[in-house]
Image (cartoon, rainbow, N blue to C red; front, top):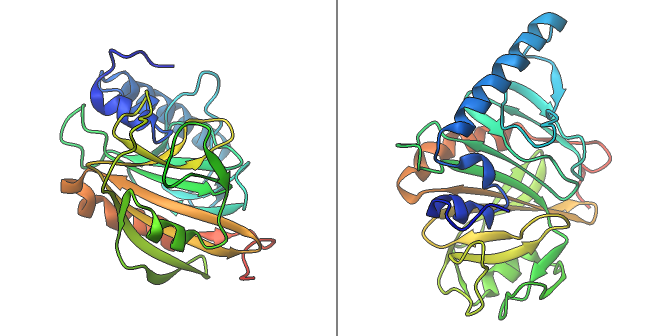
Length: 259
């Protein structure tokens, strides 16, 4: 657990599960560069080419933030399994889990204190009670997750638009916090928790940030939510790169057909 004397934006990202790497002291950036160079050296030694699909890197213990060399990557643990392509600027900072993984990008950050953007993939299994989203107050994922978001009393949700991800039908919308719960999360007081995770802090919608959510429900009984988080003034700068990742998604054959 990171102490209470952290900078405010770093505490904010704990509520999103993806905080530790974004500390504004510059150390994470150095670790990323070192890890990236090591991976580049390894790639040259073994003749790895950008066209090859690679597994997401093992970040070690403790996790070392790692830049992703542009190219295609496949998940190791996350279900439903998928692959995707990233361009320049994307990195991974937390170990992949069966119910979530996340990428981040700081290409348009204006300072070391700017958190940049996070693209989170969540296999939604549990949701927080919409009227009392307190710690431990969770239930199984609703059958229609998009409708659940639309009815949520603490959120303002734009009209969902049809789209596809990896050839599977999906709905896309933007969500912002209209009211925070009385019982705030200690580690993220500006967060409205929405999804419960097995081994991490909850996935939240963050007051003051812009979030675009894509819900993919045609995955043989599983529902994946893909959330792009970014500061409002920089959201449009990060969006094309994030959309490029989504456009490249390919679901594993066992999961990639609509039900």
